[in-house]
Image 1: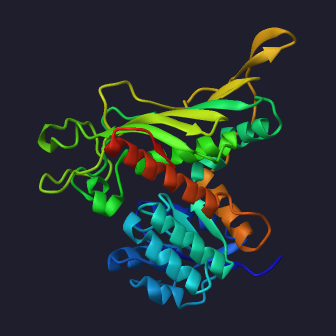
Image 2 (image 1 turned 30 degrees about the vertical axis):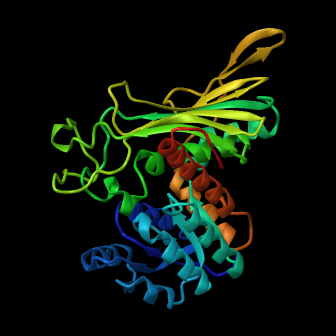
Length: 353
């Protein structure tokens, strides 16, 4: 076994702490060598908790240290800047979702990664769920046949995060639920189906609930409380249809707030079988068996932490032992699709990708 990979974590908010825990769980192969956050109190707290002596409030100083790789867990606006700087410094990079604010920025990250010949992995952690890994194997083995349609649905009844804060300020977030949570569902649908050639999209985005801040009723608020003096200039609902050339289509509905029952799932419809994932129910293949319509309920172990597996695969990729769990090229495709959804909504028509 080679020496432990020296890791740096940039951004110590909620997701940064999740990455910290994941690397601790993989401590036989890696060590958290340095941490960084713009808030000194976070750096002090996490440094003491993790026993890390190399602590910084300036990411450039962390990149000048002996770290081999970094997790970028900062706000969306800084992903491109930090990732490009990390590659120029010769570091491997795991960047949290969304990859960037838009496809132009994402392309710059991919270009920097290519020039550096270092690993770039995107934080698409749903790929590491047990059911996703199982279904991906079914698709690869032809169990579902040709996937001709996908449905990607994530609806929150009242789930706008941090109303009036950075989540709902387009200049800081890049968009609303589409870029916040829809980015996961787009990625997993394309990953599971194997369709990575979105060619056009017709979509509508609207902000009907968050725009009336003081009238917005909710039970709980992630990243709250609301700031009524802040900004809400993003969508809270997005829906539409994506074409993948002549091979497949995908219908999607992503919402932070709707007068509807909460639901989340991804459907894959193949000509030999279909399956619904992530709906909180046991996995069921809708197929045929021995000449009859049949439901198949696979039994499988589901006791691994998605973030721990993501970290494990990133460490292995940095060592050259396997490809990244979610590549920069795939992340760029995802960002192009998201950009096209926003463009279609603005134009009021189908747009090419």
